[in-house]
Length: 347
Ligand code: BGC
Image (tube, protein in one colour):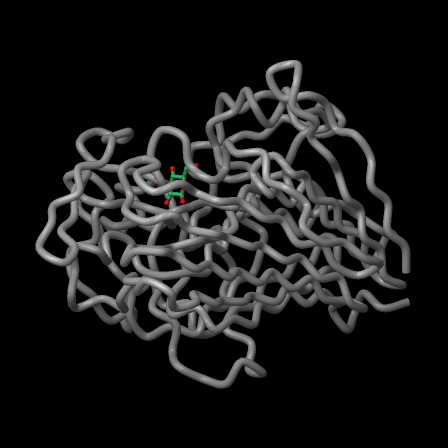
């Protein structure tokens, strides 16, 4: 077990950004205070440790990209239609930053803040941020914590948030993962324990929940992605891949909700979460991203995001799990990433 904290550049030439690296006997993960990002996740593969998280070697890389690479996204991740919602009879008008809608918290969301390190030890680090009342037009001063814990072959991500007024919250991690350590993700296998997904309209706003059964959105059995990505199914064609919210079937935290693996590297990942949903995004718009770690070129579909959290547009959709956080109550949510080797890849 080890813990390293080091400088990772200065934001606007003044504000120090730090990187924290936590290692167990199995995995090594780095996090940066800017965006409370996951900067790397090194896991055992059949060829030794590989970094399965897309990202950048420098702070400039993170500042000069718009892909939410590795970031903690909030106060409300994903879309709010019409850049507005009504809470307790009052309408809140947000900044539209994707057509007429608000995406990922608005113009300057949690991903662009330099978080404080509240606490750190050999297996965990807690990042802290206070989002002031009215920031990006959301009501209430919100104190947010993101805690990353590395324990054996597991990385746990836990959120907690408290507001002094009623507000809406959807906090997710936006890591792009490539379990082969690079290349296109079509060769990845994915399973998502979900009977229902949210088809979207041409502005990526959910229409109404629909069964996955009988469609290429059915990932209830481990499925290779390439066949699904090439499908002529309207929802996949329109989004250029998967970019959909799947409602996770209710089950115990101890039952994995998502599995992903790569034959090329032998890496298998299981996700455990108490979030009601996951936005599964196949990196359909990565083209144009600045060069990544070690000069890596990130093209479309070179990383997968499993954005465990609430449902898009839920402040406007009473039929979706509620995003309301009442004044003084605590929002808590966790996701655990567990890594292993496929049986045939063990030496
Ligand atoms: C969204 C995509 C969007 C991406 C931004 C994802 O969470 O669902 O539609 O393009 O974030 O990088």
